[in-house]
Image (cartoon, rainbow, N blue to C red):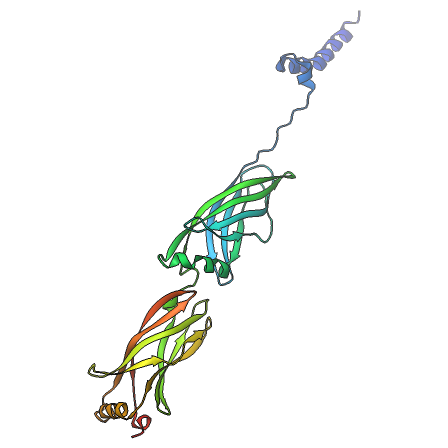
Length: 292
């Protein structure tokens, strides 16, 4: 017998059968388990958190922060959700412009938006009693992972103030511009500026003309209501009817060198929300304007 060849054959047999025997032993001598392919699916894990709310004159945008902690890409395709008021009534539908793809280990921001105008019109009734309200967003986000679509529940609360929506009648400013006389009417021309995103209406003014020592001389009325477009100025006129008695009274003060003061209040309205502005201006009245 050729001993070296037998030795070599024994070594080769051991090397060939060793891994097989080890595999069988590790699978509890189950041949089927040994030859069945093993597959560990990739880990799927991502977080959805509320990040911020941004408001401009066109859109209200709610930003969600998405963190992909898994091992495969996540595609956020669409959103089927709505915004609800403090009483649970729906005030607007949320939508996204484009799908968002987030690779493993990365973060992304999903922006859901709706029209500022449409939302503001719905929220005005809530702002009559509070300048800040709590809204809730509820619905689902449609996601796609490894070709499979699923719905992820969405539920969160956020706060929104009347200032964020730009509904601030108190920001409208009114200043005296000039005094003039037209026929038998004395006019005090005021200039109002509207810095908000919305049309402002000055529909009522209650004012009086006083002498420098505080004596009430005569009432003033608003000639007509004035609508002021966003970011623009407009004129309004406070008028007093002149007759012989009024002219004589004013002439006495003018002859004495006294000055005059207008005091009163104006009601400014934006989207059915009202605010009263206090008015107080020093004005001059000349002899020429009185025709004396």
